[in-house]
Amino acid sequence: MGVQLIVCLPDSDEKLINVCDKEDELKKITVLDLKRKIIQQLSIQNDIRLTFHGETLNETQPLKEYGIRHLSTIHTLLILHGGI
Image (cartoon, rainbow, N blue to C red):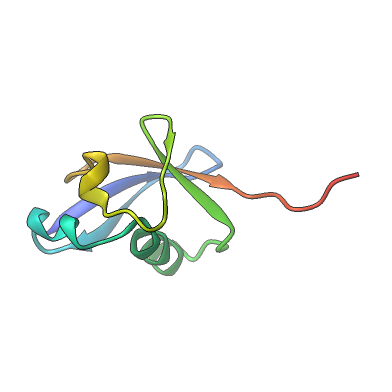
């Protein structure tokens, strides 16, 4: 079993996603890589923002920089476009 993360979707549903084989690999995987995996594995739209412990994740940063590890919970927020 590799590294999995719990992804909390906007509808409050939680899903497990496979991220990598070893926790050491989290140094190389960026938030953008994770976003792509979430979109691919869960078949959700690509206009999402990811947060961890209330902090919005920067797409260029590696997951390890945020202290993300096996079974961490990542929240997804839909980005809504438009206005009045």
